Image 1: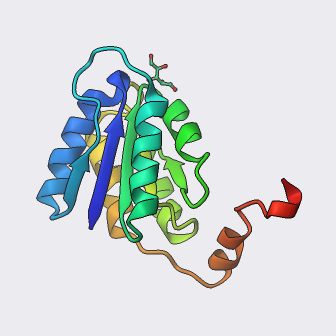
Image 2 (image 1 turned 60 degrees about the vertical axis):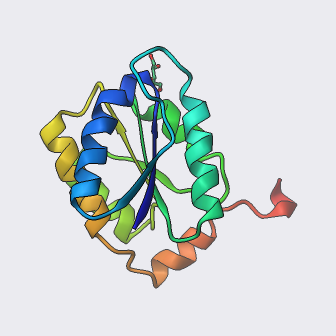
Length: 147
Ligand code: RB5
């Protein structure tokens, strides 16, 4: 699987750890920055990752910032992006099985490394169940007439 990754400075160290794990698991990782712990703005990386995923159907994403909150809010502004902020492995599994999440988000200042690795593994090994969940996902995007 092709996985686009991005973070701000608050999520940089965790992202580096997770990129290593993704590569070990056999995924193709394309990192879109940031490249250091220097202060930067999380929406820049959320938008970059979201645009790449939408341009390459079937690809997925991994985003981290300090809390995971800002970067998930920004990513979810893109129609077709379902970014799931996860704090435990059950959330990660359910985000894939029920929500067909295409971006995993974690907070680098809130989730320890061992837990983050477990969350990552669960997210990228679970599959969407479809059926009633597909119907619900189709209702997430707001129809033009309601905008
Ligand atoms: C950066 O200090 C921090 O605000 C950011 O990483 C994130 O937590 C925002 O939601």
